[in-house]
Length: 582
Image 1: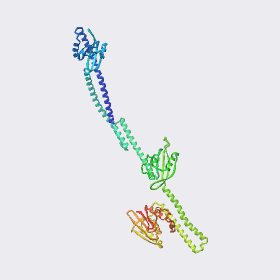
Image 2: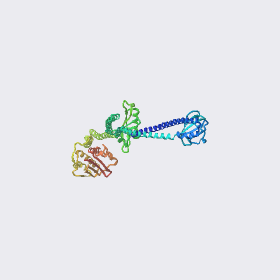
Image 3: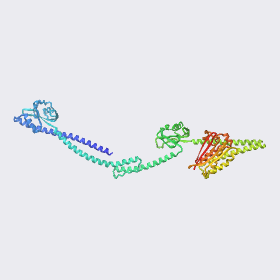
Image 4: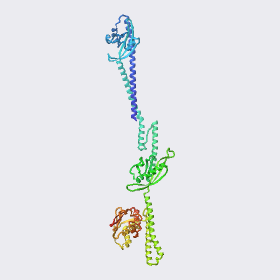
């Protein structure tokens, strides 16, 4: 800014100098020319008087007169008759000179005027002032012309202009110095204001301007400081509100995206990226570039067209796993004072995959429970009806029917017990009744409980437990886990061995149950831990299984934040590996 002001000052001073020089040159030159012209006319009158006196004394010699008075008057003297013929000249041979009748000053003098003319002389190579005066004396009538070179006048004018220019330049230098001091003094507070404004634009609102001046600059600085304080406070409030808003958005379990009337995204949260598998920033992009789902588009467009709340469900295709989402669309209404009614549309996308899965599981669970309860109840009712109709009189038949009723009743009891146990585990967030327990002792207790099931099978139980492995847990819960795993291993193994081992690492307690049984086909492994899922439904039910054992195992492992893995080969056997974090 200071440079621009200085450049402006210098330009103004330069233009002033140029105008002054041109004006001085023009006026000075004109002044000297007028002065010389008047002086020449005066000299001409004097020479005419002298020439008149000489003519009266009969001593008239024009050439002698011209030669004699030319040097005295410092002018060139030319005498011309009324026909324009030169009769005498102080500088040239008048006899060879051209007729001067058509020279402007001569022709006007012939007519009786005193005339002057500045003209370039080709003969002498310079500008001359020609002054012609009419003359009428005894024995001669014509024109007396005086010529004077203007080179001296120009030199005088140039010298004068030099002095004028020198004076102006000295004044200009002084003016520039003063202008520099003034602009510097004026620009210093403006520079401080500029630097402070730059800092504010960069986010620094704490910088203050200290100017003692009481003029407009000081008032400006004071207003700027007040503005800085207010701006800092407003920015703090705005940032706080933005942080709160962003925290609310990021904390939402649903994906949120807001689009304007041109279907361009101006707001979204990170949950949307997770649900729709978006890996880029989508602000400013069209919703059609970001999401490729017809149902979402229909919900959005219908909400905009009808200006109302719309809900629908759709499936988002993905390379990893398809997701079921529920889409809510609602217009974003502008404030009452705004000129427009709506500012766009808000889409809320909720991932209901797990909910749908739970609904399916709940439905399947009810169906399976109904089926599992209905089968033994139907059997019991059928045998009871048979006994009522007379079979009770046959002791052998009645005893066999009663044994079957007892078996089915036990199955019902076990099923209800497993359902209650599974429900209790599912509703627990963590294990409350826990203490340090020796895992080896629990395994030995389970082995003793299951020994009766080995009587009719050629199976050997191999226990491989590291000594003094303790774990903080509910003893009965871990006991139930091991019973279910070993019971399954014994059921599906006709001969060979069931190996149960317990070891520990720095981070986990590792329990493994390995059998040499029939094995499990690979397609069944992902669903092993579902409720009532059986690989061989008929065989499992005949063995007295409820279909809930492995589901209970999985929930117990989940209760302790552990992991369970299954490896199986058909005809070779199956290994269940459980890792419980310490």
